Length: 271
Image 1 (spheres, one colour):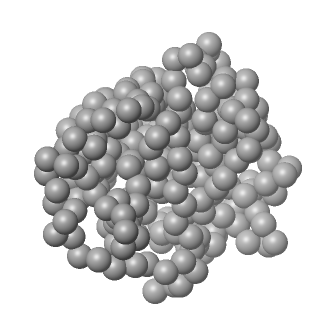
Image 2: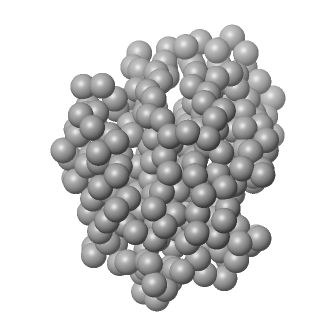
């Protein structure tokens, strides 16, 4: 069975400066490419920081400097590159996670749960669709930051003839240092309850609003145990490996999914 090499990119971000952030990230990534990793994960709003100036900073998908950059990085490096950016579409603004593939194609997920304590719900529109992508034999559910607090949205919803809907959960974030404990616990909880690895990438540094970020980017396995755990407020780039055969063996040995409550969150329905 396949393995998924996953690279976590924990970094500081230049406030509302897409060009500077893209240059910085390109330099930090160095020669990292598909011979070393399958997936490079950047933080939420990697090109601007967690800005509420959506009207000034968001760009259309086909004109976005950050979207063009992340797509070119995926092509040049020969692996998937993902992270979220602010985009505008038909006068609606989204915190949009871009999943850029090395063949030049892309898919996206719009953040559903908008962080009202920062006024995000007043500056951006919520997403309505859950998005699952496939890479190296892993089906991966995409999410952004505040989504992590809402287990119903992220819960496995397999079809009646399937045991699992997805095999890993990915969450990119700008999660503030004062709430670092919930971040760490929730990453582990989502892994345990869904019997799947969780990829969590957060930023470090301080933004223009004086908000500090502690990082704590983690790669945890299907038991919530750390594969990568960097509880420090310094930038790092580190790659961990997820094993599909180990995941399948655990799900067979510990079939808690057989006792799960079945339900469905309908696409496009606000509630």
